[in-house]
Length: 340
Image (cartoon, rainbow, N blue to C red; front, side):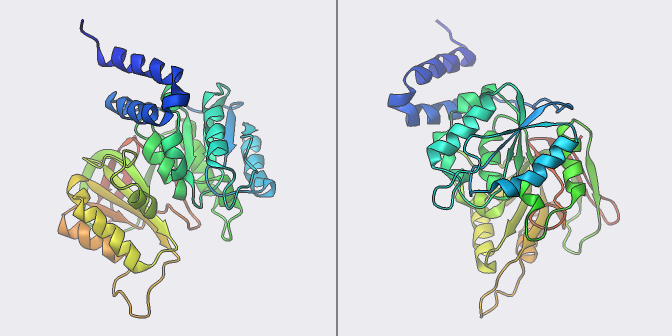
């Protein structure tokens, strides 16, 4: 008897659900791979006034005082707030154990009243959750995931099923140098379904060209850590966004070399380069800064590249929709990134 891919996947889903305690790891891997085969990305529903947004901490711990300014901003704009049960927990440097953090993600994604999920902050730890995620929950309950930096791990994995937003988080308002309110207003524009596009200034390292493709990427260090795993992005034909923070220049070069050795610069159709902040050099200087390291590969492989896009850890952190087909134009006096 012939069975469609849909029927086979449904059957495996039921078996994994029934035996998830005994076979959780195997089922999670098989279901993740099957769901990726399914194809088209889902666009979560646009937010409306009165909707509820959830806040969780998938990585480093965060205090109630650090979340309050963001909650006030969202409430002022007409939204309800739901805190994940372990939002203000503490386990080592994390907000909770892996199991506690996974429970928060699963609860917010299965709650039908929650229309978007914000990571409270980055740091380190989101990648620890990937192998234990219930991917059927994520696939069947698409909603906006918002965050940046370490949240790249969640963008990369969840982004195989749905669009996500690389953008400001609650912690962005209480950073040592808080991110600006314009970035938060643009984030709301994206989440409420408004068309968003950007024009940027010329940059001496830009590589001219005009391309369309699906946007992916995030924090370079996190993407590097996912190399070779089933959770890393599929780079073929994509436009790649990169940013990073607090790294040594030789390590930036090592990570970019890893991308080159894996032919990623041959696979992608374009590059968007955001902020590379608070970087370090050795006593014996590398001789290139982070942007020059990336530009060297962009020139070598003739990849249209837009440098200096305002996204990352600096004051302005404009939202980007990962999984969205965008149009990137890099031309002197006419640089733009259109997400519609």
